[in-house]
Length: 353
Ligand code: GDD
Ligand code: MN
Image 1 (spheres, rainbow, N blue to C red):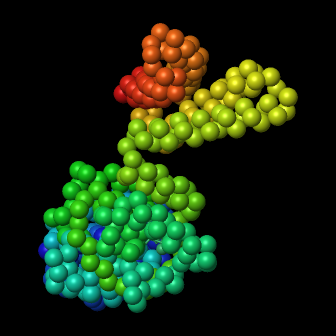
Image 2 (image 1 turned 90 degrees about the vertical axis):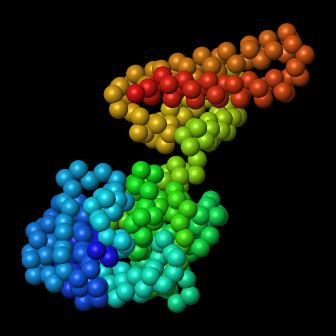
């Protein structure tokens, strides 16, 4: 088969029929199928079955009762179920015009592209369907951020956030993918070296129903970028550095209120250690939290960090007194060692599997 048109759906009942009709009109009749990957909680699956029975091309549905990885996970499930040369991914709400499908496939056939991206931001493309200037700004801003973090892999892609693209199935390395959130193309492009060719398109209005995008997706997106770019250790370091700044700010704030510096330092340390723990839970070790209680993890993390903070100063004094290492260098070494110890302790003990 030449193409699987993969459509992730979450509660898109009123859009299914129009989508199938418009897709079947434009794809190669004997060489295409539609694969709905459905996580809906409404009548969408029944509607898909109803429309499938009257369609001129095969329509399959993968209904997931355990929708891991959200929209991106759904698309990957679609890839895994396909045996076609090309997987064409599009939304189920007709914001992606099916009439573009032949254009994308033709470009794929004419070039050596691994991925043909339908872009809103290349000459002739438009993002009309984004509601309001805030979403336009967020869209532009997040693309700029992604492209500056991945200058090489995203060099030829002006719209790594689009959910409308055709990919040669042989170029997908399934094992490398860690799908989550909304941005499957970003995941594909940054984890693999793929040749990208773009075609402009006009992102239209939703046919019916409401968008599933929200602030949560935005947070997920930042997390996704960070995980793609930095390993666990760098995220841990970023949180540690943030904590150090917070520590100083709290200490200064308390002292300006008249608190004695020793107490100010103690309170600052307690707040920072707790804050770091909460951030780590969410952004560094999220996938390793199973199995042990949060209080247990907190107790271990807290005791280790408190001990480390209490031991660091005497240790520094000892290095400076007992060796010829200059104090500033000794401090740098102490901080680096403390960081490594903390990371290793958390990875191997607090979040052990
Ligand atoms: N299976 C599944 N599971 N499908 C989902 C899920 C999910 O958890 N969440 C959303 N979908 C489906 C929707 O039903 C729709 O078909 C498609 O994914 C896109 O969701 P929308 O709710 O329409 O999102 P949007 O219009 O805000 O986002 C679109 O634009 C973004 C760029 O601005 C999508 O094309 C995104 O992929 C794109 O990143
Ligand atoms: Mn949409």
